[in-house]
Length: 212
Image (tube, rainbow, N blue to C red):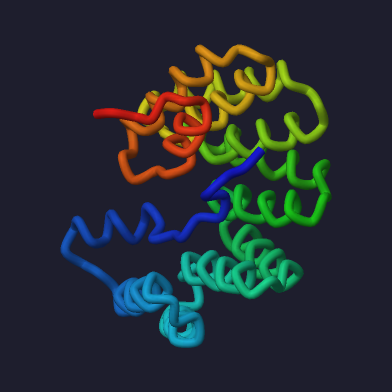
């Protein structure tokens, strides 16, 4: 099952609340500069900024999540796991840290550990969608289509604006031979996110290019 986003950059709820309150910290500001560098593809500069944020505030775990993302982008999965584990040790109620570590375990084929982390993420925040999608990927890989479908249905029930959930469910429908249901989900995915190319490609392959 293909996917586009599993590992997530983080600005953290705490950082957002601080910004809304007009009290952005130097660490949060520096982290933001790191995110801009990351978006521009400058991993070295982004890494430098995230490390600076940690130096400014040793309790700023958001930077650890973003350092983990950089490690993953460089293909250093073990380093990524170390960053996410450190973030969890500092804040064991961070659903993003559990999801991201679980995603790396999934890449590594350690599905049992991955599922433990995804389950913990939704235990912390039930309406946090990425772990549902990631569990669906694992179930699909294992040939447990009904369980994968249940996860995607649950994700859509939690957030019916999540384009990727519809796309992944469309893939399952297509695999099951239900082409009409697949096309309906692909169309919905594009409606939810008009820049999402994967469902557009699927519709074209099925002879029904998406038309707004």
